[in-house]
Length: 450
Image (cartoon, rainbow, N blue to C red; front, side):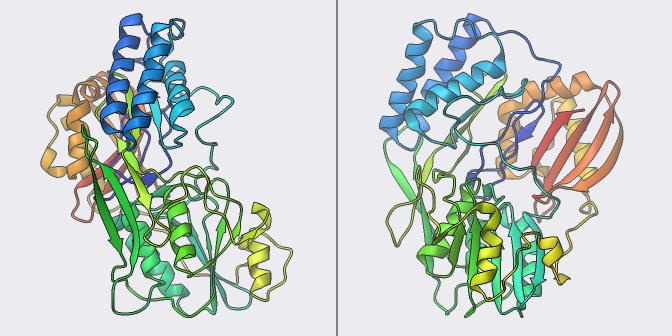
């Protein structure tokens, strides 16, 4: 399976790099193209959504029932008054969730913000992402020579390995380690496997996790197996504590579950969010609608099951805000100070703060190609290139409407390792985040008007 980044979808152009474990993307702010829906558009979107659920959803029987649900709602006229694309997308998400109960399953309007969540939301809003690099926020030495590592996401290995290797190497001499996953929204299964591998000894690869994928258009499946891989170092024979919350989701949950079942760590905190069905974007279900669809399920080789719908249960249940104090106390360090900044005796990790070499030039070439309707697909990663092909007409219209690029100013490295720029066009401004692969090709891009 290829690496994955989940970012909000198009129109405020955003395209995912591949499939895997992550928080479902959140729709962008409204764009200038927003317009009322009519009956024909609603029918077309429902038809495409239903077809996608029947042919691609990981559980064929559930997909068929969810498809029948939205078709029945349409036939009964219950969508007739929904003229706003954002409200319609949320209603489809709610109706699909009422059958599938899958927190990864989302329909998104690309030209509208998501409306307020209702009674049974597929997932709770998360905390704002802190500054970091490649999912790594900080690494510190705490009192008692205890290491602390906060990981808020698992981007593709090419983005994840450099910062995690720097952080883990700096933490290598500590007597114990606390890994904070309380703000972790998920990400790439390969990146999860890489971090688990830091804590696995022996010469023989260890079987960590499996993903079972549905073959599209069939009721057959394939299994992808994940084994420990070589790492830049090892952290063995010392206590490890993981901090979890009800926001910890998907790939963050897999890391917790893997470490728990392999008896490599003690979990402290709250039961996690309960999303174990990996997925990704599918071909657009409408001119301004995208869908994040779970096409797989996790299957742990030790338990034979996963955490879908139930979450990962910590070994020590504790209030989320007290989890760090409790972990420290179990390591012999009593403190009433939950603030890592005040506890830290040494900062051991610094996130990259400058743009990756070549990213601005790559961004300029991509924007120019999109406006002309002729992007250079050889400069794009495989999955991103396919996403652009699927959405090119709408993307060309958006960037052609903005006009020529006048200036590009680097702003920051985002928490998942992307370079964020402010772009001024002839007819507007936008914030654009670009993610580069190790080979310099573009893995994903996130765009939103300013």
